[in-house]
Image 1 (cartoon, one colour):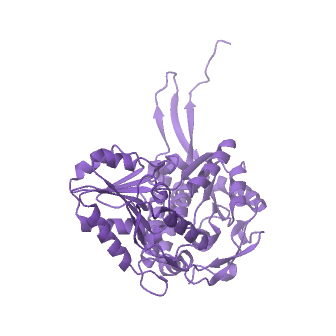
Image 2 (cartoon, rainbow, N blue to C red; image 1 turned 120 degrees about the horizontal axis):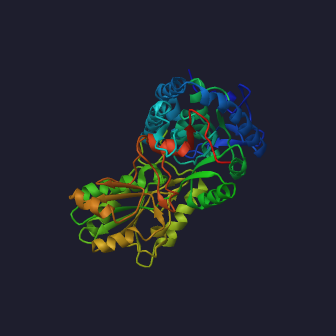
Image 3 (cartoon, rainbow, N blue to C red; image 1 turned 60 degrees about the horizontal axis):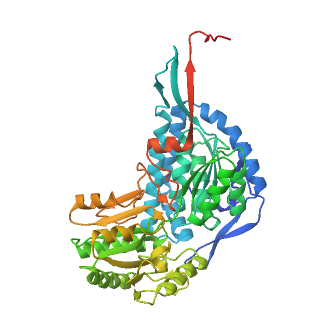
Length: 487
């Protein structure tokens, strides 16, 4: 049986045990590879957010009070449903997002694992006993925050939604989920249907498809104390400022310009394989994408030549209709941002070694050689299939190049001496490091997050990180007799 019934797409908000449509305008779901319309969805409004927050807050009370095995059972069922409906969901992921089948399958694997990991959270210890100088039992307890607002982007919408939705629900919260309107189906409606089929009580997960006005309404609603935002650094600064003014806890997972350091002892072919995957996977539309290739001068020329040759041979096209390595970028606006950055970077010693052109939304994998710290593509997040390559002569220079941007998300180091890589990583602050691997990795049980302009240092993934993110802390004491005071 199909998970998604297009005749009910507009019924995206739970209220009173049934689905109802948003009250905003209707917008098309577009396939970026062809420009075809896949369906229509109705956008939410600020009034919808207020109504949803109220319903969610009411539903959350009884959900949090459920025995922990009941909540765990819903998460386990959700995990099984991701596998059961993998073919249908993958089809939508390829068509709506422009993902190649490999990425679509990976997203489903991560979603399934996120639910399995979350299913273990309800039975985790929710506090600890601590000493007290008074004759009493003193303890620290964790309890659900209430309603969590999740704002997810277009690029990998399943993963970037489920990694907050699943643990937040498992820990006894309700969730308001605002996906990017460009990926409303895989970023929102799929998750809602999975949890509906898994037996999640009505009102606990509500999908509010909309733009910045809907996100702002979530940020300002007093019934939503915690916001989990994934998106650009520019948008994240605005979200963080608004959340701060309303005294809300805000988890920000933002942009990246991750470096891949290729040391003088690296195997060049292995390094090129890592580099191509790190920069070109999913058309470079991943926050962890390798945005800077820092290569030792001894192997620099050889590396650039081989990477450019590989880039020129990678097939680009419609992932739903042919076997390709790269599909389309999400829309013309994103394509033009990529191309403008490539155009601004070429020249003044920077050579276009491969790519630099596009057909409709299909951007060719691009290699920029000879970039420096003043090159726009070196300093900014490109979010496209572009590999800027810079050379270094010493480890000190490599560290300086790696730390010169404001971002601190992921780092890759390629060397035959793994411990040398670990020692080098200790000098480059990032939230994630991979020795002898590229920068794009994700596992449900691993903490994920960045530093600097890549985020607030909050972490998703792993039991303790998720408990910290989606519960509050309470100090509780118990005496056998009332305390006595001198007045």
